[in-house]
Every structure is written in structure tokens, then in C-alpha cells.
Length: 170
Image (cartoon, rainbow, N blue to C red; front, side, top):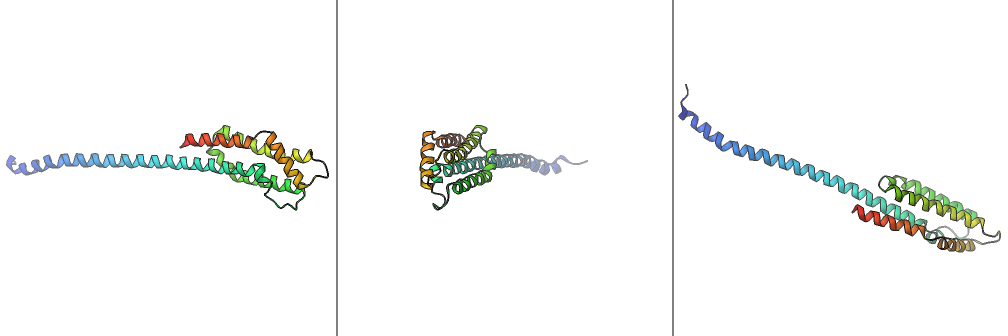
């Protein structure tokens, strides 16, 4: 049979070690919890950055699509139909390149972007169809700009909607 006095050092060590072990366990648990929370915040921030980048890219796309930016894009030695072809091709290629951004933008904003693109493509063709046969490239560019201004600046409206939405993301 063991004597109680022989067990006393072990009991004393256990009494001292037990709170230390509990505190150490609590510290590790809290540390892991904080690290998980930090990872969640980083993930959310990363997704927020992707959304902001999507808004930036689509705003840049819309800016490039404004007729005032399109008219100076290609060589002035082109025929009108060549210019229209190159502009349509350029707009379509850039739109396809940015199509993945719809994952980060609201459905309404994406529909507005698509509508703006389609309206510009339609404006390019309609302006050409309504021009007389002896019009020059300079005439076409002037009429295109005038038709856009008369039709309302729907690209600026779409950009403003994107801006408001992007502020909500931040």
C-alpha cells in the first residue's frame, strides 16, 4: 500500500499542471479559431477584389465602345464599310474577352452592358444605311457621333450604374 506522503509531490504537480494544460488548450483553440476567421476574411476580400476588377474591366470596355473613342481608332484611309467591319470585330472580340466578368456583376448590370454593346453595333450599321452613297469617312464619323448624342448617352448611364454597384461591393 502506498503512503499518501509519497503521492503528495505527484498530486502537487498535477494541481499545478492541470490549469496550465487547460489554458494552453484554450489558447490553441482560440488561435485556430482566429486563423480560420482570418482566412474567411481574406477569401471575402479576394472575392471583393475580383468583383471590383470586373467592374473596372467592364467600365473600360464601355469607355472604349463610346463612339467618340471609336471614330479615331482606325486609319482614316479606310472605306466606311471597312471601318464598320473593324469596329464591329474589335467590339465583339473585346466583349468575348470580358464575358467571364458576368460572374461578378449583377444580372441587371450585365444585361445593360450587353444592351449597350448591341445598341452601338446597331448604331454603326444604321448610320451607314442612312448615309448617302457619296459620303466620306469623315461624314460617317460626324453623323455617327451626332446620332449617338441624339439617342441619349446610354453608355454613360450604364457606367454610372456600374459605379453605384461597385461602391456597394466595397
